[in-house]
Image (cartoon, rainbow, N blue to C red):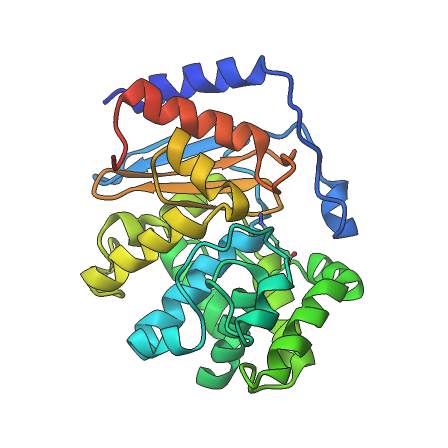
Length: 304
Ligand code: DON
């Protein structure tokens, strides 16, 4: 497949679209980004790299980090995880509080903020230094020691993260958070602040296109069944209340973040990462979704 040619032509076509999105401003530090950035990186399962635009520039991965913390905890505790968090799509916004009350503090899935906070709590319970473990894990997958947390972004979110503070305290009232809420929030804001490029992101997510194997070290980090479940979660929950539309139009498992990143996986074929900071009303990158819809349409290949 001529992936370089394909992403070049998609890039040029999408750039001509009027971008109807807006940059996330509820984390003030994220608003400072140049909203015209646009990059695409694709890695096929033979380790060939293809990229265009701002694919070598780092950005805040935000919610995309939730897939990685979930994978770590799933590999560590297996199916016991599902006692603490569900695996159903929420049909609600990423930061919604409403379902928690009638579902007794068990978040619908690990990718809405409520679920990611429970996973962050589990990270604190299972690792002496979860921040160091998480960063090393990502650096290893990306084969890039320069990847780091952005303390200014983490601090900015800490100062404005009233909804996440409400979520973690509310879940704790149902005894589904075991650590101190401020410690859970601290780890969560740091995990979201990690910065990397589209090229790094496509590399990191190879774990999910290789059935749970880290291609470089040949370590089987997730069992094949666990990897199937991670991809199923991304398919059903990766785009919150737009997960149906993403499945309908793109047909791949994936995950978005409010930094404007989107990553998608075509199991056994490729991973692809797109970055464009302007978001649609559901908090997903406008150009990101336009790009991925064209990719699976032009290649006539998706999981369906
Ligand atoms: O907790 C938050 O609101 C952000 N740190 C992450 C949200 C996010 O990326 C949602 N994704 N589209």
